[in-house]
Image (cartoon, rainbow, N blue to C red):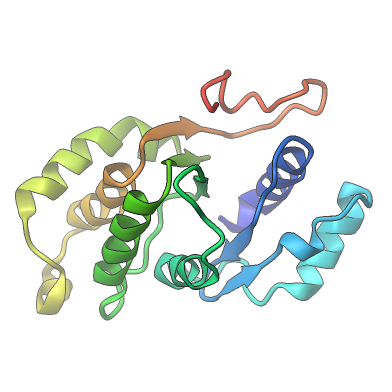
Amino acid sequence: MGKFVVLVLYFISILEKIAHVDSYIFSDTPTYVSPYITKNSFRTQYEHLRKKTTSWEYGTKLNLALEEIIKAKKYTATTNILLLTDGGISLDGNDWEVTVMRLSFLKQQVKRIFLISPNVELIKEGEELEKQWKKLNVTLGSQKKAVTPYLQKVFRYGTLYRFSDKQFTCQQVSPRRKYSQCFNGGIR
């Protein structure tokens, strides 16, 4: 996601204008970034965040960000979670299994989970990969070294698709429009 950080930060700053947003940047460690989203210029916000965040693009430990969200307990049954990701999920150790457990828990606690990605492949192939994920009925466990690149996509993309209620591709935002072009009115 490193190359999409500016897009994500711009998107968050737009959302802040229309809703209450709690934001985390996650890579190898999660960073709660809401305090750094201010009314300053976007460039100032970006520079401030760059200095304050501990991680930008060193892997995707989604399970750790989900742990922070669950610990903070700032969600209710009316909360919408927007998960902006390129589709990477760490498959190290038990990261994937913990990610599945935490996404499953949050899916039961909140109104909806939206998957938003600059990765067109994730959105196009996600539904089919979710079907493959359900058929596998296995965990990574000790078989990890035998997992093919295709199965890695099944575990990553299938999982994200499985626990999201709606999926969107977002590769650009338009400062000329009141809302992002990412959704075409799809989130309410």
